[in-house]
Image 1 (cartoon, rainbow, N blue to C red):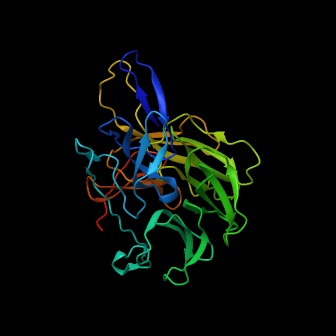
Image 2: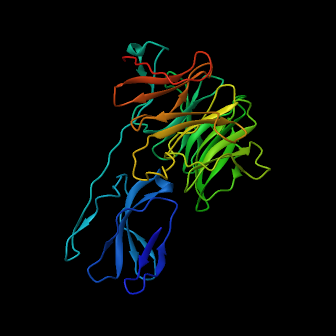
Image 3: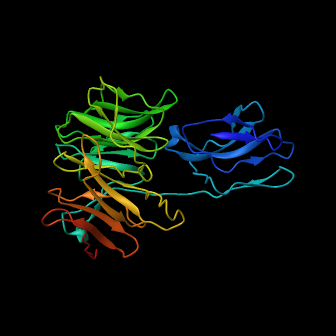
Length: 334
């Protein structure tokens, strides 16, 4: 949301709001409007440049290209005749390797910018979102890519029985949670949210968990979408990029969350926490310090460990259990 604050009385008025992120605004020299970089939901949240008139709040698009203009760094000359910004280019492809033998990894996509999570179908095909926000499926050898959905969609998750694929999609000015049949047909909104991301289907194919913005609260909804979504915890999950994960047996959910403020010493530095709660929600069953450098948490096979990549030590580390939960750590060289 972009707002204006009166210096005279401190009153606040909304100028413009959008589901995407708004970058640093810059006033035009005559104060008739503001230049901003905004992440567009209908373009895989690539940053584009916009003009927002003041005080009417009308929006005019200035760029419409494949660039990803950054939110931080828009600059404008004093005469308003030239601007500068930084552009972010990301290239991402899918690779596949035999378990435990990364030396045999093979690239299976080329020039098909893969965005966010991918998910395996029971048939062995892989579902993913590309840079144009389309959902595709392809074979592990990279052959036979099939378009499943082209409605500004991300983060597909195949349900355990393979009947449905759930995903987040930008439609009707909202980013909600949707499901479709495995062949891409019969799309249905199952959670009518203003901004929701990171849906994941439970192993029994009965439930979908996701993050509700803007606080990124864990929520679940039935796969049928007939009941109101249920808030699982009031915790705020750090970020919304695949940081919510279901255990293989479908009984637990793990997620990282910011530390609770220390009332005795508010300024004290406290680590983030990794929490594990029951799938039905409630108080944490387990809780550990979570490194700031840790990547997305992943359940290990068997559900007795949570794996993550740490950029600090350059290896794969995990929180493990041998007899009950405890905090352990191990490094593996790639």
